[in-house]
Image (cartoon, rainbow, N blue to C red; front, side, top):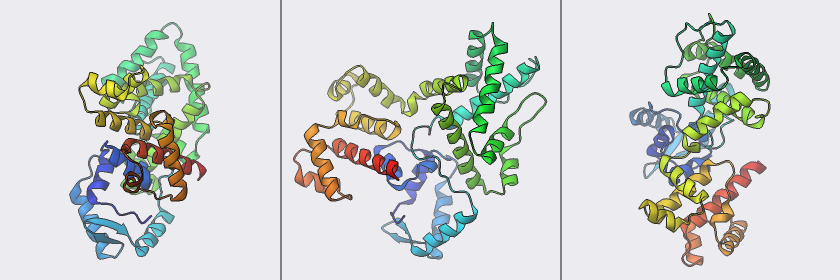
Length: 341
């Protein structure tokens, strides 16, 4: 898609910068799979890539904004004809949950595997104390019924991996460690799949995303896995920043935006930014609740006339239009379009 982008924007995507403008840029461009992908990617690396693309005529530059050329589009199509293209991460819902969930699932898999052999002398594959405490909490609750707990776990795992693509299932299972079994490293699996490093990162994240979605869609059949996932949502502020989560709690309690700003000693515009973050992150969001009915109807009417309707055009037609109202209507329309596609 020929939408211009700066190197800083691309870097912010990989590093997971959480601002309404970055959320919007990612949503507009469909870059969700790159969000929070890697904090190790440096600007110098991106500079080198872009310089190489410019030399080959794959992108053009105007005011430090880069746009893919027709030649560049052709090269992309050719590249992804033989390489994996991320296709399952289409929103922000699990961006902060994905990797912690997989780490916790690896630990649970090891614990249940060792339990099946009644072995308590082993080194946990995941050292994070938060994950280890979560496992201990579960076993304290079910200390009297470990046998049935183990049976439920095995039943769930068999079911889950039967629901996803065979290669993805094999990839995830081969990463797991169990009794007298050391899981393969990501590098070993990457080489076996003949993928490039970044390509495999996209693939693995996609596989975890699929697993999470299967659990969410079948929570009655996977109660243990869902409980693990649900506890992480709580720990990770439902996928929100800490400050936005505080605003969310107050909104749930019935506070107005102005009241929240006053009580938290922050600007009303900051609270509005929090609302926009929720709209981007949550799978389901009550857009109309935060937009006056007439404004909602007027903006939708203008978007129907012109799909590329901008805020600059809107403020020239509607007096005192709030940016939050405009963006919420736009986000809702983008979501509907994605669902139709």
